[in-house]
Image (cartoon, rainbow over all chains, first blue to last red; front, top):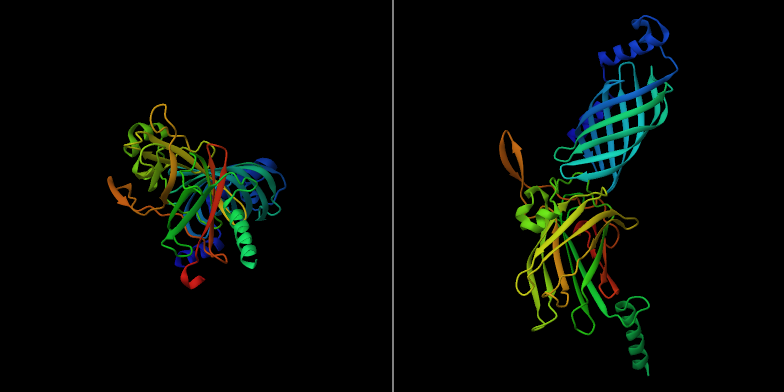
Length: 166
Length: 259
């Protein structure tokens, strides 16, 4: 129960990552030619090509769901939480929440699941359902969602790539 | 008259139970056993399953060529650490269990086979091993291995694939069983009964901790968190060399305080 409480509190905490802010600032700055400090707070419509990798560790598990927390790096960096639900012997679904500086993104994924020895891999697609803050209105579908689960400790590595509208 | 009618009804009912649909000439029959140990909802467990094949005539059943074991919905494979390593079938056949990593072991059991000559008595294969095999299709693969000695000097190795299922059943182990020749050029052996576990009972795995190899007990598949009315259903279908089939069902009763 203690582990679950920690996970729950962690779920509500927004991650702060200066590199994410800088990356986004540079992105928007390049698009609009404005100063990074101003661009970092702007909400601009456009398309972002995501290419992110995250490393997560198990915070708790309940029934068929592994609750994972970690950090994402790449196009958008920040604290990431994944609820990975093993829905059958060869299929998983996931809710992904990413908290970069100044906003958040929520996505849902389905993937095939292949346990093989000490590592299980998954491969599927993710859609970005919503965003907040500077990612308000974010959406996208058909993003690649792949990764692995270390079966000894349920540590997860996940890679997301594809285009997302903001 | 009443006794005659009762007898006729009983005979008809018994016929429905024993005979596969539409095939009264086929007389194979099967019983299935299953259990969880420990039997606690939501807790990792060792699953023991076994079956016995016979005929109504009292003879050995035809050689078994296929097995489809359906397991209850809700069995939780999420956090099991069984099968952390993979055993290559070629290594298993060449060297037996010694050819497989310890962390590939899934369970063990025994079998009784009938050799179609001699006394007619069954011969026990005292040791069957279940290990995790390569899974080209992405599903969990269980390799079963038995090293037959006298009078059947043959190795029995076959694989089963754990597939998702629907309804009351959450997964099914589908296996094709190879024919085992009793003696060169002789008839095939009949499998009469098999008992096997899938779970951590009597298994020891190893992991490296600070450069040392440390033994540990793997975590099993978990018993479903809720017990359906009547218990956890198991079912099996058996296919024989002559094309006939038979099936059997059983229930693992709910833990006492959940009945």
